[in-house]
Image (cartoon, rainbow, N blue to C red; front, side, top):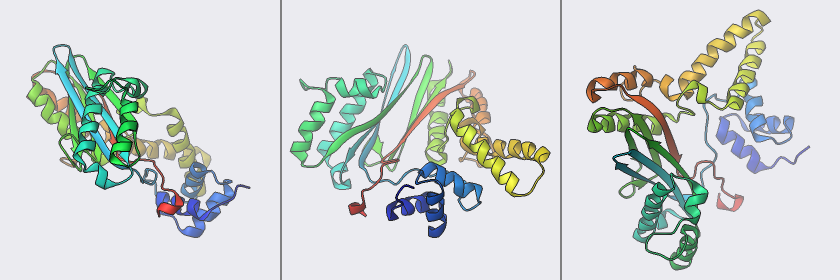
Amino acid sequence: MAGITAAMVKELRETTGAGMMDCKTALNETDGDMQAAVDWLRKKGLAKAAKKAGRTAAEGLVAIAVEDDAKGATGVLVEVNSETDFVARNEIFQKMVADIARTAVGVGGDLDKLRAATFPGADKSVDEHIAEMVGQIGENMSLRRSAGLAVEEGVVASYVHGQVTEGAGKIGVIVGLKSSGDKAALKAIGKQIAMHVAAARPLAARIEDLNPEVVGREKEVLADQARASGKPEEIIGKMVEGRLRKFYEESVLLEQVFVIDGETKVGKVVENAAKDAGAPVELVGFARLQLGDGVEKSDDED
């Protein structure tokens, strides 16, 4: 059996909201497998169903860059980490992150290509420039993630939550809308949808875009919960189907209730946007990066 540490118990407790002893039991029952322990607690009804990101330890900035041209629009997100929030408020660091975001547009947000791309105004790669800046600023920094979204006809709208400087903050979201309609109207509704994404944290734009492993695990958990309630097998399938619909409504962007008005589904909001835009509107996709999402602190940082 894997050694269960206090740090593992603490992480599971923060992730699920379950009691300390229940978390310890879950980890023992699953040989220290964190995801399996989360599922074990959910099956026992001891964990909250809400998804929660890993512990956040990283500081820095998430930055956005969007470029429009005759061929369409491209938007990117980049996350550049630092050790402290103090550095994230340093103008030199902020300019570096903005330059990296603009460079990311040229490679469509591809992380490997971005690392190797030439940093603006320098005869070196983005990774090499960051390494040089570590020596200048005196704190460890790294380009952790990037994401891109392109629309051939339409707009890429954006939103920054917890903005620290222009175009950069704690959470960045880009949303692609395909339409031949008025771009100002498209950007307005696109920004509202991006604000929704920042708050609601959807897993995918459409049901068919969900990771099959995530859906399979959810079905298994729901089925075990239904059996635990003592219902007969012929009823369990219908219970799972109904609860799975609720999961989709909570996890899929177009199925979620729009946080702006609290009653309309996002899919209907996109459909209704055609009136203001003057042409049909289609949601191409979205990307969301939250600073430090999934990064764990080491024990000596607590």
